[in-house]
Length: 208
Ligand code: PRP
Ligand code: URA
Image (cartoon, rainbow, N blue to C red; front, side):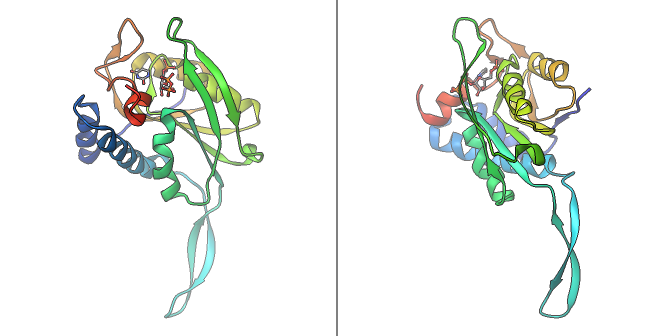
């Protein structure tokens, strides 16, 4: 079964509370999402493989470490875009793929409308980005597309998850570890996360 890592850090806990607040404006929401993704990035990249590289300091020659495994970031459109800048600032050489999915308002099932991934995705450590893991339908479908293109090493990073969504990913993709900033209580009758933060895409892009 895949690993679930729930962040346990005062900075993240504080910022999540600000993010949840319905009075948080679009600008602050965007900044908070970026900051939380940045802090989570530290944890989610902890096991990236390293190799030796010689480097000459102003004092002498020494051997340092460099990341060997190439990374691909794959935000799920739209709201996943709010996490890209943070991860790009940590891993500037990462390539970025996009998967476009939206939840049908009636069925709550994901509907695909876009998929463009790096051609060498099978060689990369893939980080799938989406702030919300609710029913798990969107993330599970996105991971299906990415696997069909040959990716073998995939992690899922979400800001807020419902237990139902975590269970779906662990059942459908037992090889994909999940990193979340907060694990919430449940889904409501409209499949929104409780307490959650509402609609992440609308809050991020001001389309409420
Ligand atoms: C949200 C969110 C996830 C999805 C989660 O996107 O960003 O992609 O819902 O729900 P699920 O786990 O039940 O599939 P939404 O469909 O609202 O699209 P948007 O990002 O374009 O607003
Ligand atoms: N998508 C969101 O943006 N929020 C939720 O709570 C559930 C799905």
